[in-house]
Amino acid sequence: MYTIMLIINWSELSIMTENSKKLILRIALYAGEILLRNGAETYRVEETIEKICKSKNLKYVNTFVTPTGIFISDDRLDGINFIKRIKNRTIDLSKISQVNTFSRKFVENDISFEDALSELQQINKEEKYPKWLVVTFSGIASAFFALLFGGNFYDFIATFFTSVIVTLSFQKMELLSETPFLGNTAGGALIALLAIISKNIGIVNSIDMIIIGAIMPLVPGVALTNGLRDFISGDLISGVTRVAEAILVAISIAVGVGSILELWKHTLGGSF
Amino acid sequence: MIYLKQFLFSFLSTVGFSIIFNVPKKSIFYASLIGGIGWTIYFHLKSVTSSIMFALFIASIVIGILGEIFARIDKKPVTIFVIPGIVPLVPGYGVYLTMLNLINNDFFKFAKIGTETLFSSGAISIGIILVPSLSRLLKSKKTLK
Image: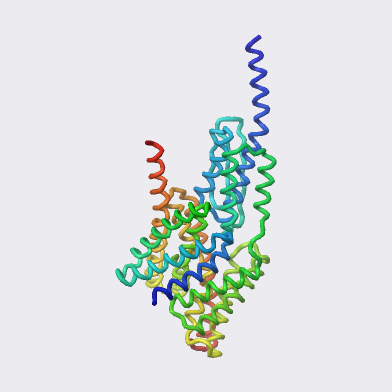
C-alpha cells in the first residue's frame, strides 16, 4: 500500500515538473539567445544558461554554444532538447547588461515563469539609440580616429562626412541583403571613392587618413580580438567561427577599397 | 601636451563607438574614460619601449583592471566597459591592410602585417582575459578561508 502511494506520488511529481522543466529550459534558451545575438562572449552565454537552470534544480543540464547556434539538453532525464539557430549577430551592450541583471534577479528571487518570459521579451524589444544619433557619432568616432593617426583639421572634416555617408548607406544595404559582405564591399568602395574625390577637389593632401578613419566602424578588430579570447578560454569552435567571420569581413572591405583604387590608378590613370 | 591631445582624441572616439555599440547612457563616460586612458598608456609605452606588443599587453591589462573597478561602481558587467575601451587599440586597420595586400599579390607584406595583427590581437585578448581570471582566483581564495 505504502509503495503504491509512493509510486503515485512520484509519477505526479514527474508530470508536474515535466512542464516547468520545459519552461525553465525555454527561459534559459531565450536569455542565451538574446546574449548571443547581441555579441556576448561564448562563456558568458553558457554560464548564464547553466546558472538559470541550476537555480531551479535542473542539475544535469548540458549546453553547447557556438556563435551560430545554441544547444541545450538535460542528459539525465527524458531527453528534452532545445536548439536555436542564430543567424545574425550585432554588438548591443545595453541588452547584455540587462540580461545579466535579469539572470541575477531570476536566480536569487522567486519570479514566476510567465513574468520572466515577458521580461525577457521586453528586453529583446528594447529600442537602440535613434539612427541619426548613431550615424552622427560614427562620423565623430571616425573623424577622431583620423586625428589620432596624425591627420590635420581638413582630414577631420572630410573623414566626418565620408563616414556619415558610408554609415547611412551601410544601414540601407543591411536591410537589402542577408549577408554582411555585400554591405561591407559597397562601404569600402564608397570610402575609396569619396577619399579620391576629396583628394582631387583639393580638400586633403592624401587619401590615407580618410580611409583609416572612415573604415574604423566597418573593420572587424573587436571581432578578431573576441575570437582569440574564445580560443584562450577554450571555446575552440567559437574561436574558429569568429576569427573566420572577421577575416571574411576584412576581405570584403579590402575588395571594395582595393578595386576602386586599382580602377583609379590603372584604368583611369589618376594619381593619389 | 601631446598626451592630453592623444587622450582627448581617443576619449571622443570611444564616445562615438559607445553610441554605435549601444552602451547605456550612464556608462558612456566610464567606457570612454577607459578608452582614453588605455590609448594614452599604449601611446606612451610604445614611444618609450618601441615594442608594440608589450605596450598593447600592458594597456589592455590596465583596461581590464579599470573595467573591473567601474563594473563594481556602476553595477554592470565588465564587458560593457572593456569592449568600447579596447576599440582604439584593436588592429582593425591591420586586418584590412593584411587582406588588401593579399588581394594585391604582395605576399611579403601580407605575412608581415598579418603576423603583427594576429599577435597584437592576441596580446590584447590575453591582457583582458588575465584580469577577470585573477580577480576570480582572489575571490575563490577568500571564500575558501
